[in-house]
Each structure stands twice: as structure tokens, then as C-alpha cells.
Amino acid sequence: MPSPAPRRNRVCKRAVVQRTERITPHMIRVVLTSDDFAGNGFTDTYVKLLFGKDGVEYPEPLDMGVVRETYPSEQWPTMRTYTVRSWDEATRELTIDFVHHGDEGVAGPWAASAQPGDVLWFNGPGGAYAPDAEADWHLFVGDESALPAIGAAVEALAPGARATVLVEVADETEQQKFGTPADVDVQWFHRADGTRGDALVAAVEALDFPAGTPDVFVHGEAGFVFRIRKNLFQDRGLPRDQVSLSGYWRLGKNEDGWQAEKAETRKRETAS
Image 1 (cartoon, helix red, strand yellow):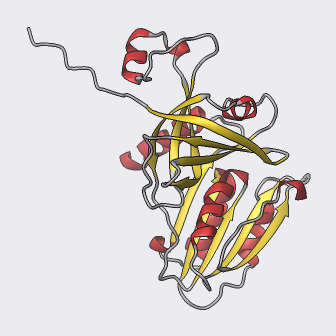
Image 2 (image 1 turned 90 degrees about the horizontal axis):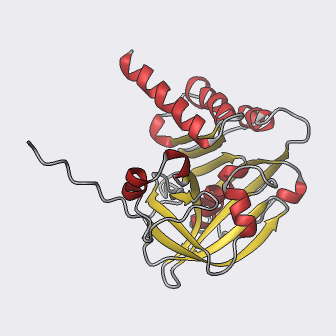
């Protein structure tokens, strides 16, 4: 009888909370230190954060292979994907911004109650985008969920680089400032009672693209990302390699539901 396959090691990486800061009424910045994190050169770097269920004790270091073998599924930690706002190799400081709307969700409430010394387990990092230094100009479009990636990208631009930034937030209290040597035009759109993403779609459609090769980044809620995608590829005819598109989340779905929907879509596309 063949021996059972060896269990796959899924030991997670460890970070420790150093401090927190509420940078806007609904955005909390958490600064952690980690000896397990390594930068990857992308400004859209993301990590998979793991949040344990209340009242459940897990082995340390957290090994998801052990957890899945020995705990019922309802006790498994909840995983959420977050963009790294910044990483300081010298101090080992890992900064992550969390959108917080009261008791809604998992990660936001965790960030609101985080205290120095709290441990956060994660997997990653991953990533695929950094501003193209050879581009003639840059366009960044997104909502609150894309602000960390947009901020990291804008601050990575070289002196004199040209960029237009279009961001939708709830109101003026949610606006942020970016420190950058580049020539950046930041335009804020307030959601108010309008449909999410409408102002961003209209702004991109009305934008007079400068001459030269653009580098375009459009991330955020999947609905408006899809609509802008049509304008960029079908109406303007931009090459795929000049555009980074990602639906970070879908209105009305949590991350688990959105990931399942994306997986099903990819499955249908592969089969067709």
C-alpha cells in the first residue's frame, strides 16, 4: 500500500503591529514590522492577510496545512487580500491601509482595534505592476480600495514624470495627499448619492489623452473597471501591455464570493 502523500507545508509569515493611525475618517493605517517580508519591486504589491476566528486558538507559527487538517472549516482563518502601501527595508516596516466602516467586514474592524504587539499572519507578497519609466505619461484611476496602490505608484514616479490621477471617494474628508517629485494632477470625485464609479467612467471618457505612450492603471470595484476597460481597448485602441486593470472587489460580494465568481468566469472562458 503506497504511503500517504506528505502534507504540504503552509507556514505563514509573521508581522507585528507597531502603531496605527486614522488618516481619514474611514481609512486606518497600520504599520507593522516583519522579518519575513521581502519587497518585490512592484508598487501594486499585495499580501494575503489571515484573520483568526474569535475564541479559536491556532498553532504558532500559523500553518494552514495543519489548520485545514485538524480544525473544522468554520474555524479556519478568514483570508483577505490587501495592497502594501509601503515597505521600508531598513526598518522592516510594512504599512497597510484599511478601509473601515464600523463593524462591517473582517479586516476593517481588526485594524480599528489593533494594538502594538498584536501579531498578523500573512502570505505573499505578490504583484505585477510598477509604473513604466519609459512611458510618456501616466493615468491612475481607482476608488478607496486602490488608493494604497495609487499612492505607492505616484510616489515612485521620477522627477518630472507626468501623471493624471482620478480617484473616487465618499466625500472630501476621505481625500489624501501624496508626496511625489513628479508633475501630478490629482482629481477627486465625491460619490455622494451617485452610482459608484459613474464619475470615474465619465472622467476617463472625457479625458483628452496627451500625445505619446501612456501607462494606465485602473483598479477598484469591478463594475467601473469593466466599463473603463471598454473605453481604453475598444474606443481608444490602447495596446494591452500599456494598461493594468484589476477588479479588486465586486459591489454586493465579499472577497470569497468575488473570487469564486472570477474563478467561474475564467473556467467558462477557458472552456469556450
